[in-house]
Length: 263
Length: 292
Image (cartoon, rainbow over all chains, first blue to last red; front, side, top):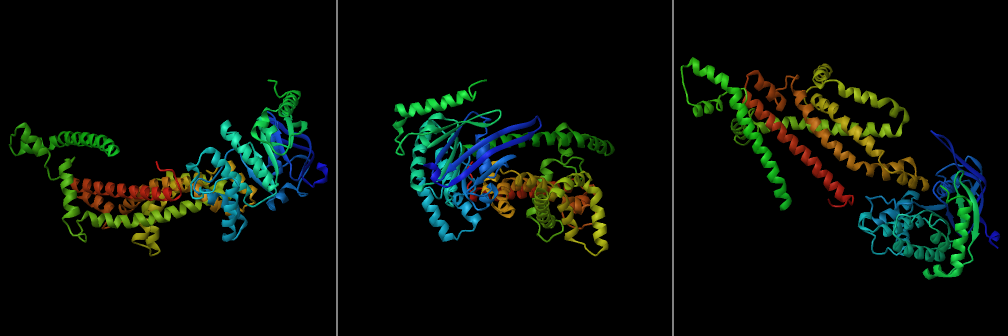
């Protein structure tokens, strides 16, 4: 059924080798993956498995050294030039000298959007992440969770269909993380975006995703792809249901099969 | 209030210590000449009287603090500003070339930094020359600048200002290279994901990120400018300015005048550095910095 939707990201035999002082490091090897419109795909695996690298290849922040990848049917570079995606980093990476609304305005200024339209867009995206009322605050005046929400608003600002998120909640405590996970699901449902989400938390991956990509290191590769059978409506306590735990167990098995738990 | 007291007490203590040490030094250094004087005049004086004399010589080796203070006060507040003896007049002359040199130096430093950060060839070639330029003693190069410029008819303020420029562009260039390169990778990646042009990345990221570095280096640069202006006045036969006043006083072994000129120079330096720091704080605040 998923095949019916157009592919947003399509990778085939994708490989990336970094040349380092200690010799070549294979960050990605033989990755075959198609992500369809409207999916919420999580990438999970231990550090060094290439999950962030894969996201960065989609974003044209790294260049693949083998295989092919297309984003919206274009090369990643063309897609980036057309501003096909919004990117959320591990840290909020807000510019400290800009207020929250000016931070959200940054991408809009860069694409040269007229001011009136900018104001409307800022209002809408800040509302989407529940930050209305904090427009004039500077980043340091906000909590870590709010800062990360502001950075999500910034990524949503020019309304790209694809949202790339690189461990966006990794630095936050669990209570804040639960809350943001819920909000992210709501946002996904309201906007119908395609989301690629890198995480190292199994519950987070299972809770959020329609599909979970399990990866393992040395060389970075995909070891398992798990379709979630959970309904689209997901209250937080869905995490105690047997169905949820079964999927989590499968993810853990996938990680173990990829020797992710070996030393 | 408490923070004020916390600052005042240590500063006053140190100041008091310096003044006491200075008096001791003055007595010690001026004593031989005073003894010589007394022997020739066949005068014998008691210890207290002798110490008093060492502290009130007209041309002492080390003037006592009160002598210098008196001189500074007299030549700052009791003279007309247009008078050749007024320290305010001399400080004003030096200040003019300091400010001009500082403005040139800051502009030049920023320009060089922008070039180094954006042009690979300049990055590879320029820095060693800039560093080499600062290893040449300014006293050696100052007369040459004056002579060359005088030969093409440029005299007065500009040559002195150029010597200030020579000293002040360096800290700004070094600081701004660091400042323009200070944005985190993530902030730069962000600009890349927006497909921002180099120009946009420069104005919206590199420049604002470099502002704290700019003010830190401008503090050093303005002090260097003042030194440059004073040094520039020494070999130029300048008739006015703190440097000219220093030189003139040294011709006549007028040590009290020399020290007074030095004090005037340090006061000007303090004011200038304070002013740059103040401007830096205002800019910082307007850029949303967390109040310290």
